[in-house]
Length: 129
Image 1 (cartoon, rainbow, N blue to C red):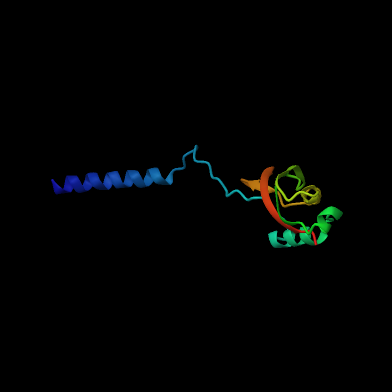
Image 2 (spheres, rainbow, N blue to C red; image 1 turned 60 degrees about the vertical axis):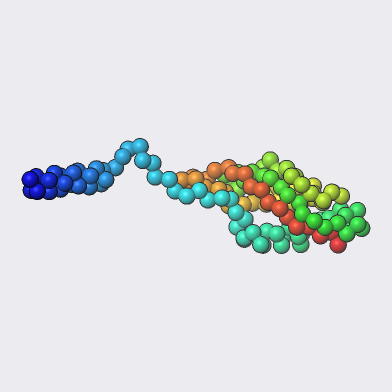
């Protein structure tokens, strides 16, 4: 009796082992998705925006500071599209940040190794002094 039970158990285990080694045609290997990024790094992006932004005269006179939040798409060709201001500080600063970011190039997002368009939300600190 013990021999039969042992034989049965070994058969079940060997069948399970064989089933695990076969590949299921519906198992799709997914590589991790990579978000778009600024090639020089996020900190460098913030610094470039802060240093190179042309602030409107009224914003400079009023010492406007705060944050401008944008939503934009980074297309597969690295360009920025569909940029909208989510929140801002006014006095033309929001539009200036938007126009600056629209001219930038980003490393596009990737899914399964293929470049794809992805949406990005970013908040930029601003000081018009």
